[in-house]
Length: 76
Image (cartoon, rainbow, N blue to C red; front, side, top):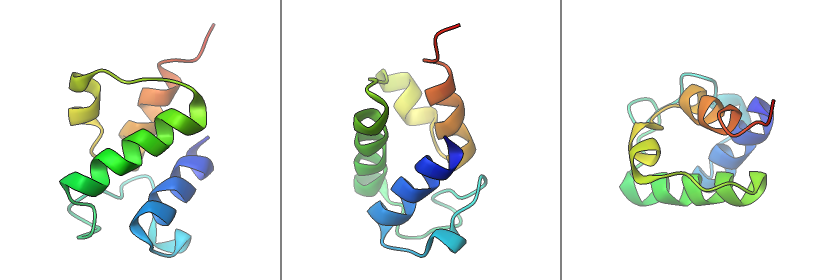
């Protein structure tokens, strides 16, 4: 799952996958601006068939937090 999210972030931001890790964020990837943040979230939602609420979207500021958000939808 983390690899797929890293792929989404890399593709959305048009950066090499090697430059995206669990701690990647708007602070480490300057092209991760507010517009691209929404694009990343929408792509993750589409890829996993889920929908985040506004509060979750605001808090998903790293790849690690995106992964945790997707895991939160996992069925037990």
